[in-house]
Amino acid sequence: MGGITFDFDGKVALITGAGSGIGEETALKFAANGASIMISDINTESCKDLLSRIQDYGGEAAFFPCDVSDNGQVEALVTQVIAKFGRLDIACNNAGIEGEQGVTAMGSEDNFNRVTATNTKGVWLCMKYEIPQLIKNGGGAIVNLSSIAGLIGFPGLSAYVASKHAVAGLTKTAALEYAESNIRVNAICPGPIMTPMLERIMETTPGFREKVIAGVPEHRIGSPADVANIILYLCTDQASYITGQCLAVDGGWVAQ
Image (cartoon, rainbow, N blue to C red; front, side, top):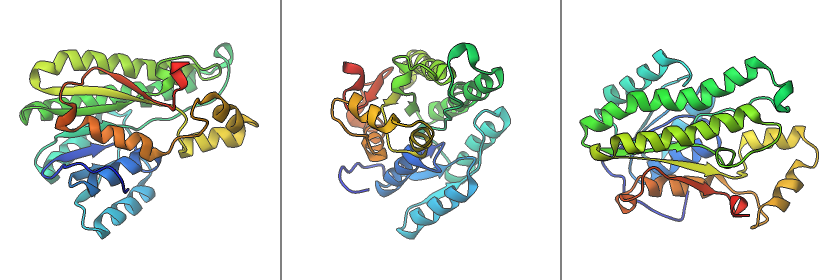
């Protein structure tokens, strides 16, 4: 968690998909920089462990489980943030799944529905309930997690690519709708980051790791901290003129 520091004293942040990877690192960094945070995930055990780690060094945090594809659960999550902390200033809508691999014509309807329900509908539902609370506070910042698969295509991941392109569209639209309400909405588009999701793909696809590293101009796989640092920056006053952007954090992948 070392390195870049920010000042989020008095701010309340909500992080979905906080049980591992980018969400976990983002939660730790927000807490270490003074924010009170609500962490959420469907993985209860990992979030309980994260909660303990944050509280051990004096951070203020709470956990509420949520399947972001479920309207009632998302509404309850945001309600719980307000009940616990009294306000919401920052939201990082990070929860997502990769789904099954396979070319478009061989994909299942079930897989497409599951992936888009979590990755696209989940982001929409989160913003649906977060934005009214941000308006009550006079503004705030939202960072949605898209992917470089929200900027370019990837054969064999049609549902995932479609869902992440949709996140980019939701982000740009919400940014325009709520700019006058002092709400900034941006998306991060990570490239290959060493998360459990990427590790699963590497385990099931021989040669994938080597192919990925060869495709990144920096010739390395990124860390969750590489992404979390940018998420935090986008939520600071120093980024007050940035909204509606889909920022690739990818070691140069999509610049090629």
